[in-house]
Picture 1: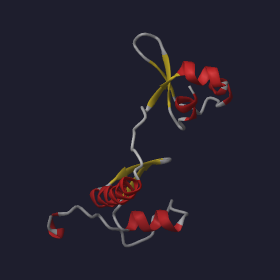
Picture 2 (picture 1 turned 60 degrees about the vertical axis):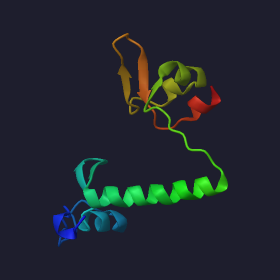
Picture 3 (picture 1 turned 135 degrees about the vertical axis):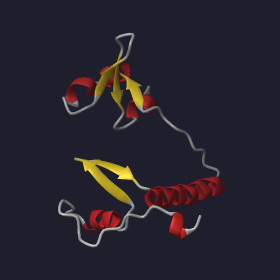
Length: 116
């Protein structure tokens, strides 16, 4: 794709809320945009960077014979209750009840999935 057709909304000034240098650079380069506390839009150039990094990691994993897998975003509460972390993680952990009234968590880590 031609650079002239690419969306790269760069900034001339450092963002006011960016305290870390890498954060400032990514925002100024047009890779990400902050939409809330800890929430960012990944812009086209940023997504392209992520895809290239994934390709490099995937290539190295294939070279060594490693296998790639993907875990679910939501994890059933029963796994977290069994490990004892359902109550210890606190109110900050995102919990959601499905239409069958089964509780799930937005998995910040996936130890429970592996140790099941």
